[in-house]
Every structure is written in structure tokens, then in C-alpha cells.
Length: 306
Image 1 (cartoon, rainbow, N blue to C red):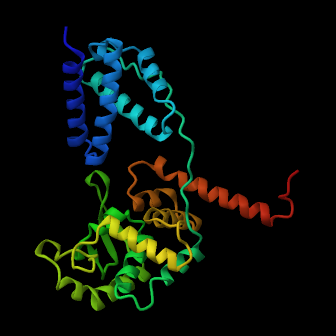
Image 2 (cartoon, rainbow, N blue to C red; image 1 turned 60 degrees about the vertical axis):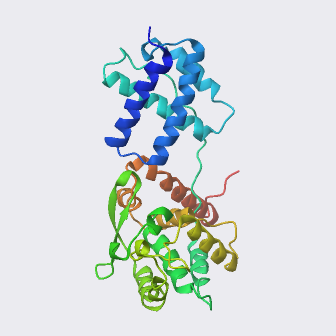
């Protein structure tokens, strides 16, 4: 009889390789799935299960129950990894049935993304001015994040050549190596032009060869990091009186919410955000509907209840 570690290690390695090569999942996602499936293997070992074919629906249900008490989002991700493993095993002919089929997924509380009102976004962007030496870069960075909905990791990975300033578009490298073409608004374009003319040449003179093409540079001429971008945003938010209320992802949420408020359809917003599924984007429609409900309740003479 094959030991559980030998059997499942092979199955899990094959599954993770499939996710990396065929599905193009990021290293961070693959690492998380690897940890989740290692926990699952330990659980099955404790039950004496020596192969995936020996696993029952009750076993999967018991594993799900063992995840209670932790973060609901972590439990949901772990069960997603387990389901993926069993579905892959069925597709490969390693098992006779998918025992996760009838196991209900853990319930994850709906967390609505936090978007800033437009007035607060404008306060934030206005706070990038002043006499700070790096103000042109900071303005360009924040205008870009809000104007394109880019993830901060996508923004700091950009090279100058990725932005077509004549066509007002940018090529963003999203999750799983998927690229998308996104328009860049006139405010962000002007801020980028100002930064590229006034400040970046000075910073670039300090740059090492490997950073010469980076769009956003730090004070030493190196490529601005994610942590550096967070620091920039935190300092600007403090000056704007918005400390603790803003993260780079807040600007991404604000981008999507304000587009929907302005009449954009959800498929367009999905493409701009780089979501592989419209389901991920639909949470923003809930934000917009809630906002409409608030406006209705405060404005319509027949809206009062009770």
C-alpha cells in the first residue's frame, strides 16, 4: 500500500505544476495553495487515508469543520485548494468521483470595498503639491493609481516605455501574467508629463543600470517599491487629513465605484480592473446600489419607513 505522504505528495506536486503552467497562477497564490494542501495532507494522514480514492465526503466535511475558528477568508481559500485538487484528480483519472462536490463551501462574510467620495480623492490629490522635492512624482503616482485603477504592484513595475503618452494608454501586467491595455486620463497624463520633464531625469542620473527604465523612481534613483508607494500615500493622506482611511487599494476601489456611478457597465470595469471573472467585479455594483439606496432614503418624500 502506498503511504499517504508518497501518494499525495505526487498528486499535489502535479496539481500545483498544472496550476503554474496551464493556469498561470502567481507565485504567492501557489505558495498559499501549497501550504493549504500540506495542512490537508496532515489531516488525511491523521485519519489513516492512504490515497485520494480512500477519502470520503465525510472526511472533507470534517476537514472543513477543523478550519472553523480561523479567518473565514482563509478557510474559503483552503477549501478552494482542496476542491481544485480533487477535481484535478478526477480529470486525470486518479479517483472515481469528486468527493468535494456535495460539501458546502464555508460562508465568507461580504466585505464591501471602501471607496472614497470624489471630494476626498480631490483633497488627497491636492495634498501632493507644495514644496516637497518629490512632489511631482507623488502627484503622478497617485493620479495614475486613481486614473487607471492599477494595483500598486502593477504601477511600480512599469517602465517608461509601457506608457503611450500620445495614445494615452498603458500596458499593465496583471495577476497570472495577464496583460491589459488601460486608458490613462488627462489629469494623470499631465501629472506624468510634469514628473517626467521636471524630476525624473534628475532621479535617473542616480539610477543603476537595472533601474534605468523604471517609470517611478525613489530618491536614490532606484525603482520605487510597493512599500515605498505605501509610504508616499500615507504621507500625502496625513497632509490631506485622511490618515488611516486610504491605501493604494482604496484608490482602485474608488476608481471602479466612481466609474459605475458615472454609468460604466460592469463588463468594461471588469476589463479595466483585470478581473478574470465578472463575479469579482460585481461586488462594486453592491456598493453602488447601497449608495443609491442611501440617496433615495434621504431625498424621496415617500422613502421614509416605520
